[in-house]
Image 1 (cartoon, helix red, strand yellow):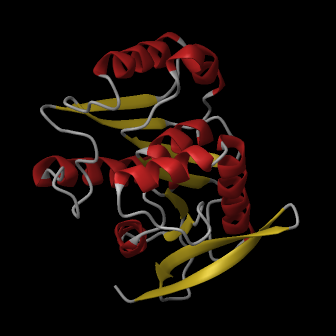
Image 2 (image 1 turned 135 degrees about the vertical axis):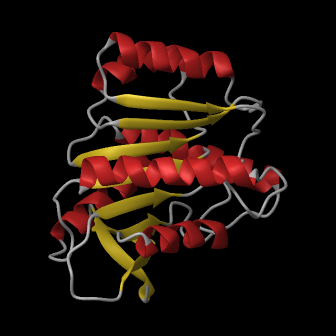
Length: 229
């Protein structure tokens, strides 16, 4: 499929949020999806995921939460993540949702959100927002100290993708999340991949696990097709 890709900006309370956009190069209408970066920033891997969503038939954008900064080393990424206020990041993402909703080429008027690592946690929080039609959360979670109150606010169908061997997202917390989603009657599908480490979807890292990544991608596309089209 031929794509159009470009850097764009959209407004947020008098500010401008830069973002990478990829969309099918046609005059048809398509569902919209937000792709949220890992703690590394808006790097080539996240741009590639955004293009892959466009190839699957979506208008996809990835807000640049770090405003041009991209980390190469974990210590640098950790500092960038720690300097990012969650509410500021969520406001950037919500501004992206509103931008997509304003586009005549985007239907239905309910946006999908997916994120990885830090972006997975932000995607989980976006499941509590209006105008979000479905969320895919790759190895991210609510904090355990506010998990129940957060789950009570979940509105969007919630797809969770986790690795059993993820040292950063303990499996006990994932099981607690699944139990609370069950208890509160939330539409969800939690998937735990055996022996998969953190960031097993990222094909630029040693953590990549091809079979699990392909299955998780297929589940994500099926989830969005079910709830966004």
